[in-house]
Length: 226
Image (cartoon, rainbow, N blue to C red; front, side, top):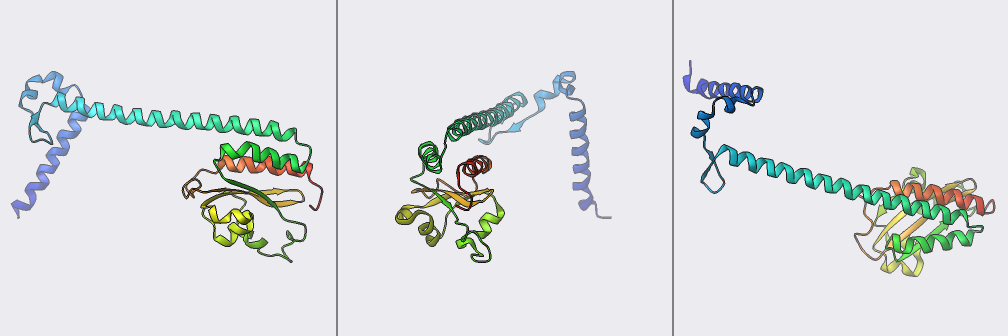
């Protein structure tokens, strides 16, 4: 029998039993205060600190962590509230739009500041261009439109030129929103001169709701087969 190999196991077992007992009896040191004076917990500085000091430090760290999480939740709640306000305002504006041009103007007015984007383009495919037999890859956007999910990030230069024309050279990041409705197929594109304004990690719920509102409005004001 190898006593040296058994010793660490016995120590670990005893440590586990002590740990379980203290967890099950949180008032243990209240009933045995004399033990506290024999306890020493090494500090990162090398000095010994009392158990109470260590507990206070741990509690402060936990409180700071909870405070940070609470502030983050409050920040997200405020951001969501602001996004809902914007959507509500946009919806009211689009309800008042009677023509295609009025819809486009409303989008340009509303989102130039909100999106902090230097360019905005609404691209709708003609009936011929939307025909998958004649244009199977939808000018390079078939996969995006089939997925029907907003996309943020960087685009190849050829697609930037297709969407933004002369402005393409300055566009560094984009947000694309699919536009789909009865008789309509296309996309709403926002372009920024900043590499980091639109990125793949961005949430897309707001963009999805925006796409649904714009699609339905365009369906109402557009002529069939635009």
